[in-house]
Image (cartoon, rainbow, N blue to C red):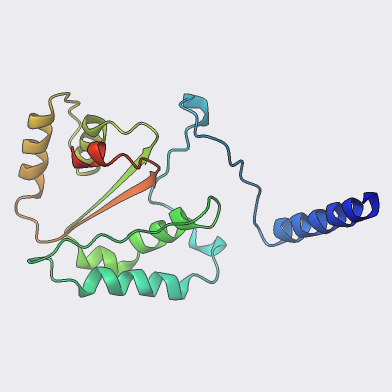
Length: 172
C-alpha cells in the first residue's frame, strides 16, 4: 500500500508541474468567504497576448450573441465550469472583441461574487453606463437604468463570478 501511495504522489506532483508549465494554477475549492480580502473582483479587460487556443470558443459565443432576434427574445448565455478553467477570460475576450463592441450599443460588466444584493448590482450596472450616483432605492435604480438604456437597441450585460443559486433572489 505504501508503494502505491508513493506512486500516486509522484504522479500528482508530475501533473502539478506540467500544469504549472502551461500556465495553470491551483484553485482552492472551499466555500466562498465573505471576507473582503478574499473577494476576487473581475473586470472586462484582459491581455490578449497571454491567451492562446480560445478562438473557437470566442467565435461560438459571438455567433450566439449576434444570431438572436433581440426584439422577441432575451438571450442568456451561461459559461459554466470548475474554477480556473477560463470562464472569466472567455467572457473578457468576447466582451472586448471588435465585432461585439460594434454589435451592442452598450456593454455592461458586473462582478456578482457572493454579495448578491440587487441594489448593489443595479448601482454597478449604472456605474458601468457612466452614472456615478449611489442609490439605495430599488425603484429609483430601475427607473434610472431604464432611462439610461431606453434608446439603446442592444445592450450586453455580463454578470461574472455568479455563485448564487437561490431562485427567489434571482427573481427579485
